[in-house]
Length: 431
Ligand SMILES: Cc1ncc(COP(=O)(O)O)c(C=O)c1O
Image 1: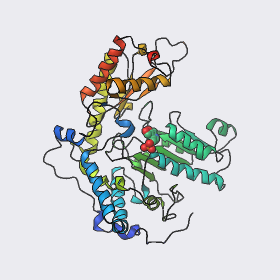
Image 2: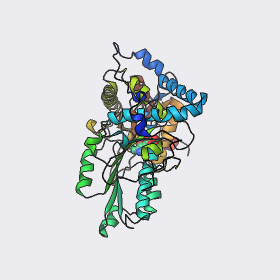
Image 3: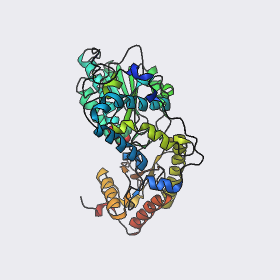
Image 4: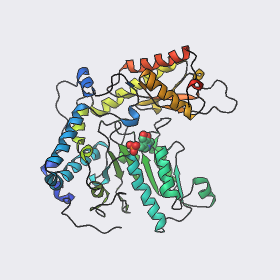
């Protein structure tokens, strides 16, 4: 464990500000009427009107009122940086962490750190694994497991931190009687997207004696149920810039408090090294922290909608299922998973006659739809099984967020129908 850094010149001690009036969390406002359709349109009027943006899953969205709130924080810093640094920053971050702690039902605010994104959170957890190999707490050959559909960047991170420091894959490790040290499990897989029964998988890991479970839930908050006490993972990360209306970029990393205090550190080391991950992460050098400071404003924003974030989540789910079924019907295809396994995104089969025959075709078709039809939608290639004829090999991942209109999906339906009508196939697209 790293030694405590008592250099309090940099940022106040957390306990000191715990009792401060500035940590006051906004209560649900008593709003007589909910946000109107035209107010929603105006909140997202910066979106390119020429594009049917049915890909909230990749980069999320940020309403105009939150962009304005963020700019206020940025100006506050630029107006008097020293005052901001000594008196405002840490309190503001603690306020955001406290809101998140309540939203995700964590036991204690110390369990919640704010970092840039899920990629950074993964680096924090996996770097610890690398140190455990280096320091002999894990033995060379011990195992790390992940889902086949783990996010590509996270797989690379496992390669960079775990494999390189001596970790191995399940089959080999098991054959050699090794311990499973770490399981990395997605909550909502990216591509193809499905909601994983995370509570059950964490339970299975516990029964199998896995040391640590890290849940990559990059999509989860604002999209599916996120409850730390129920899920019971050791580490859990979710972006807030995907489905929780924060500007890029902010994620929380939950680290369960346990007697075996986890020696986690931010990969960017600064003055706060050794003061606990939450405090380390609250100062990783001079930069723009405004995305981490707007969480109270975002909470106010979501509470303008009927049912708050829960209501948004439910309506997004219901509408994406409806739109997915509409598209599958129009194209004579099917959904990629049962409705209960999707949240605010769903996979829809594309007509087989489009001739999607590899991953590069999906990318080319996606670009074609963007450039020629003003449609933004990611796609997935599924290789046909042996002997399968006329199989659906391409699936679109469609998202629904509050700014979407049914017309966005009709535009997609009509574009694909037009391509099919024109006997288009992916072989016509240049490399
Ligand atoms: C499952 C999963 N993990 C990790 C990430 C990485 O998120 P970020 O780029 O915000 O770090 C994503 C992004 O889409 C994702 O879907």
